[in-house]
Length: 150
Image (tube, rainbow, N blue to C red; front, top):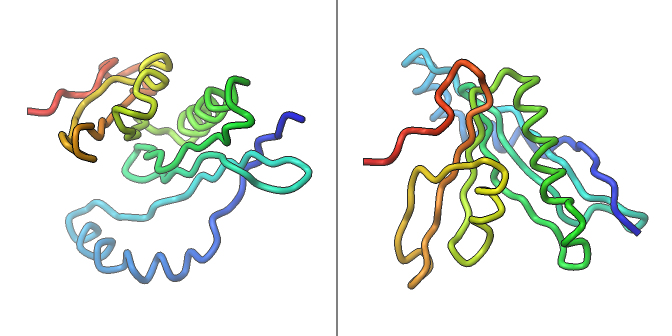
């Protein structure tokens, strides 16, 4: 059976808000109010949620924190569908772009096929591999690629 994708709300936002409070207060004083909103897309079947996407929306960008598709559901285009749904939500919310990170041993090619471009890299994270940061611009009025890291 193929799972459905269901948009959920993230629980326990009160605790998160208290932890992030000092950062939000500082940013607000600099005219950058920190008020993230969450996007949660779950892959669900008759058993419940198993995999999906978790993202945050703030400062006109979406940050995809997690994208996970269980092995048994891979190869069905679910990762692409999750990303396309996230991009549609980002556009609806007026986001400039989306950024995500992955590892050299995981899925950089997946993001590149979806039009994401690398803008940063942490070497030896983990040892012998890299953590790679990708972005995709959503607005028609902005450049098609993020600025390269210096």
